[in-house]
Image 1 (spheres, helix red, strand yellow):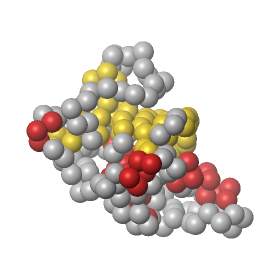
Image 2: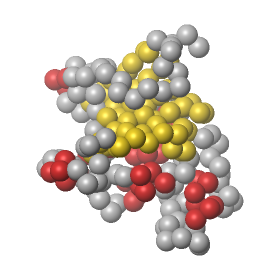
Image 3: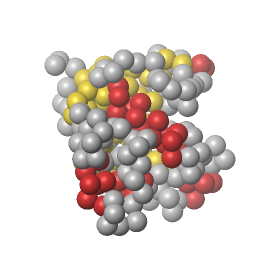
Image 4: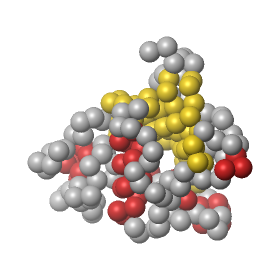
Length: 181
């Protein structure tokens, strides 16, 4: 692999990668995606429409900065898992989802009128199949395995004054312990 194949979601006019990944030493080949045609991205697409227009196992990295909170609706678990499944689906095994969201306690979490949901460290726990095995029936963790088929591990989380930055590793196949594949 001589370069890393990257999808930058909700890129707007930016081409900056704000989270350092394990493959950062390789030169990036970036595909940009945004809903707004005036940003002149490679792909114009509404991320609320699934499936996203990419084949399975296509990118080593998906970067999403200040975009996931604009998708779905707070309390709509199905849309949350549908969107995150798309990121998981298009990542290669051990690929990474890198990004940021406004911190739940930030003015910007709900201050921006276009934000539809809050995502925090607890929310990201629901993307980890090993956490279901460890917590369902023992803690208050709701079992969403009937609608969540992907699997991520949070490899890094960092809180700044206003953002939560994350690096999630895609496990493929998913580490399910409930008999589903």
